[in-house]
Length: 102
Image (cartoon, rainbow, N blue to C red; front, side):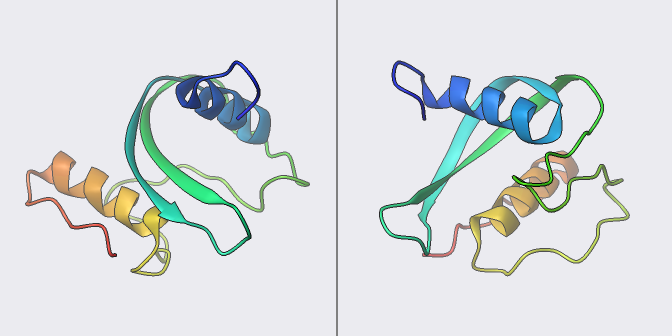
């Protein structure tokens, strides 16, 4: 987060910088400690606002769009990344929401 920037502004900026996609209406979901010193992973859901995926290879390894019924292997079950995906799926499909692992 840059000085004077909200976490919502940071999410929009980071997504734009790292994958070239514009988002709007970022909604904070949860946080999880990160295995680097003094780091915290913040989890958001947001709406797509435009653009094509263009990776910044020094920042991110991979980014792609997937159909909800054709997802790749998911991140580890205890990760916030997996929780965000499962939460989105449960809301989309009308299933009970998962619990973020502690």
